[in-house]
Image (tube, rainbow, N blue to C red):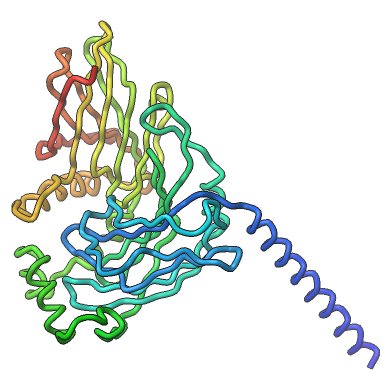
Amino acid sequence: MKKTITILFLLSIAKNISSCQKEKGMKIAKKDKYDFMASSCAPMAYPAIVVNGDFYLADGSSLYIPAGGRILEAGWHDDGATHVTGPDLKALPTELKVTWLSIAEKKFYTGRFKLDYDLILKYFRKKFYGYRKEYHTYRKIVAGLAPGGVVVVWLDGTGSRVEVGRFKAKETEVTMKDFVPTTNISKEEYLDGKFDRLILNEVKKEVAQGKIPYGLWDTYRKKYTWQPKVSFTNGQKTTILGVEYFNGEISVDIDDDITSIGYKPKALPKYINIGWEDKNGYKFAADIRFAQKYRKTDDYTKFKEVEKEIFEAFKKLNTSENKQLDLLFKIDKYNSNIQLFLKNDTEEIELKKTFIKIYENN
């Protein structure tokens, strides 16, 4: 009997300690408050509509994701609507709940996901340089919604975007009364109408053939050990290097920071902006796109071919785990031409399909 009482006493102490630690943790969480908004996005070729969504915050409040039928079709980098709501300073999110329509699939998805609060807090406490050599902090949390129920969450700020979570939602049923209560048409008519108006013809063919690329957004998240490297022939020097990655992240390095980027695991670049200065003080810049931007009137197949080139090159030259690769930009002495190569220690591949635009930046 005495042994039983002792065990119960110890369990009671452990429970109280755990409760105190949890309470202490929540007090700390409530103290860390920041000014930020919520938003969402979807791939350009696979648009979505948010039915409802909320980020649940550490102090028990919530921040809604704008819904109301707005079409998300700007791309994996470009956010949808944001609303200024609630107090300026808010506790950070601990959970995400979201329901949305995937228009190409004519399916609804839903899920509630626990976020990595400690990781989010670490990033919000960190300041970073933007394009104008000014310090910034993260001002937005974004939910990316892709076919198959893929959900990716980023923190977004001027000159930086970082992934803080990847999740998988489940298919669900949503009635028209809950989705569009003012309409008299059936759900089938509504879904067919959105599909016909918003989906590219090439994607309609993918759907008809059962070839929606469900693994594509995880392929975008694959990281390689690489560094950008700029080669000059006439005494120029790099002043800025901004990168948008296929996985939705963004980074900006300025002046001396560029020389210390080093070999780091990163997703593949979708767009790079390089700025440089020649020995006479004239400034230049270049936009380099590894996936051509397109409109609905453009050739979607050609867009995919440009993207395919860099993925195949990295796959071919990544011959071992953590293989170090250089993405080399050779800029001529007249500041008028750039050759682009991917290199490892034994071979190189010239990237010829990449779109490059050079311009004066004085």
